Image: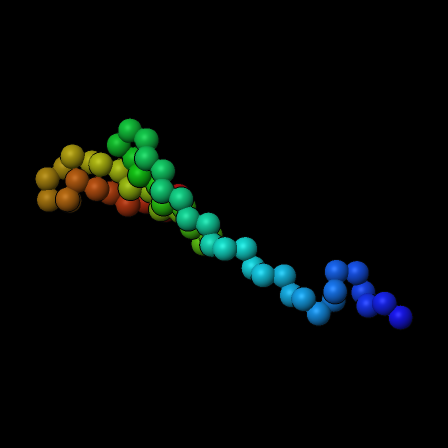
Length: 55
C-alpha cells in the first residue's frame, strides 16, 4: 500500500528567521520574528541622540 501523500516521514523545515532593518526620516526600525524595535534620533545631549521604544 502506498504511504501517505507527501512522504509522511519528511518533516517540513521551519521558515528561516526574517529580519528587516527599515529607515525613514529620523527613525530606524529593526523587525524580528519576536517583535520589533524602533530607534529615533532625539538630538538631546547626553542621550547619545537615540531613543528606543518597543514597536
